[in-house]
Picture 1: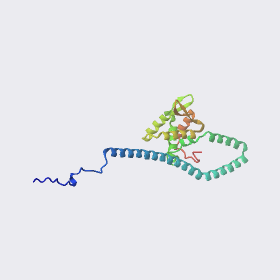
Picture 2: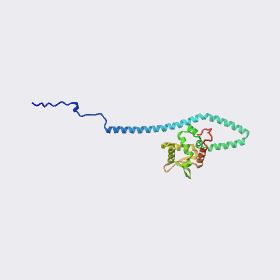
Picture 3: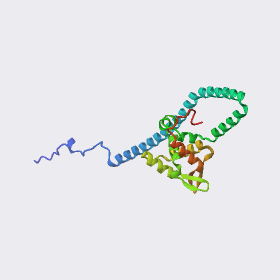
Picture 4: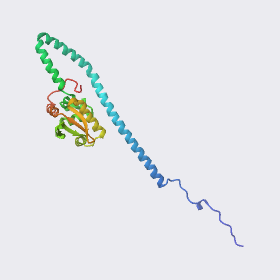
Length: 228
């Protein structure tokens, strides 16, 4: 009689299973990680910009707080000296004071920082203020002449800063530099737009003064707050 008994199946007869992820799952996970990295990089860039802004505010506050007492004391001394001068020669003192006041009024913060020696500029100015100073000192070389004045656009500023620093600045950085040019240049510098492009228009005479102050930068050290 023939033995027809079927052999019992064993574990090795069953199809092999695995918990390893499929290629599709790996790709999906990689895409998710890539998106997360992009989000984190964007957050870091925003935080860097905010840190730079806060550093600029802190620098200005420290400079103001540190010099306020000295400024007040200096003003008191100036008043005392003016009183003594008026008592001795009223007519001459009045004429000299008027001329001095006129000179101080026409000198803008941008003109003053253009005349700063490099070591003082590095200590006193924020990064973007120093960039604005760099652009202003040779703006005659970069800008185009127009009836309104010397015109320089955001693209040209980007190219100049890229050449100077070796890396292309962010669009927001260029905008801040343009804002500082207008803010520190007072009435001599204006921002405008033409055909969708942001422009800075500089008074030609002011541009000459910026360049002249640059040539005299190492001749003297300023004795007053350069940003006021």
